[in-house]
Image 1 (cartoon, one colour):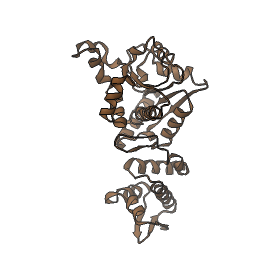
Image 2 (tube, one colour; image 1 turned 60 degrees about the horizontal axis):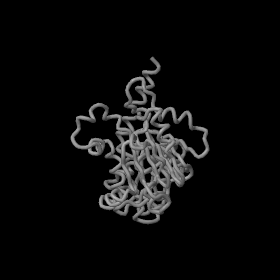
Image 3 (cartoon, helix red, strand yellow; image 1 turned 45 degrees about the vertical axis):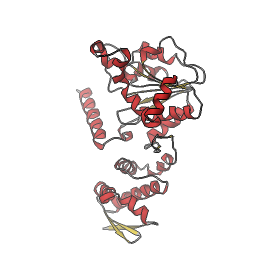
Image 4 (cartoon, one colour; image 1 turned 30 degrees about the horizontal axis):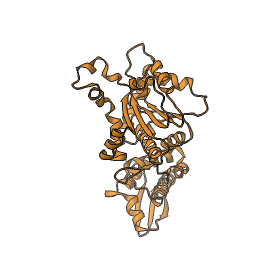
Length: 321
């Protein structure tokens, strides 16, 4: 049996590290098959030598996050564990201290994974960014946060959010209300992000003034979008023609973010996804960044990661048959 001692400087560090009902430490104990005992200002980690080393690295990583002002959650504890298993916990420091935006309730929006950090940097450094990955990776939410940040800093005059209403299909005509009311349900995720960043009243005021526009993709045709931060969501459901139409709306002093999940294409059979084609056609153009997320970047419930892994495994198995 091997053991190692970690010194914890302050009691609040230990409280944050253990979490409510010691759930953070219990997760580390389960994952690395070690025992963690608190003795005064020291933590004693015992188990097989290799497991203890990993457990200590995970605990040190979590303490570093706490020292940087991060509050631990189930998600970032799991993420630190995954980095330790890959031997990449030294990259943790890259994620900390980068506040993208402050929400209407005063909560800082920060990248929670290395993939999210790369995505934020791509949006900052490129005129067009394609963010591709599974549900729950924060593609749309972080893009909205970056748009609000640019708008508040007066870097752009407008925020334009759009997505194709492909899911509606022929059913659109059967929904009650005028065209805007018919398509609103398909734009709801975009509204949610803006409400969070700006507050409902602020959002309403900016929308009435025309500073913020949330509209289906068809509304973009024939326009040139200057001085704008434009987000195309659910882009896997665009056709090649729609994607080309959208990308060529780019005007002066504007920035575009295109998000989508190529495993969730709802286009009719025979229709090629514009996002898939854009990834291939645009990959070597300067000023265009392409960021791919994976299941490790999922910041929702742990089961979402497990579901994504299960589906990926199923697709791989089917492709081998």
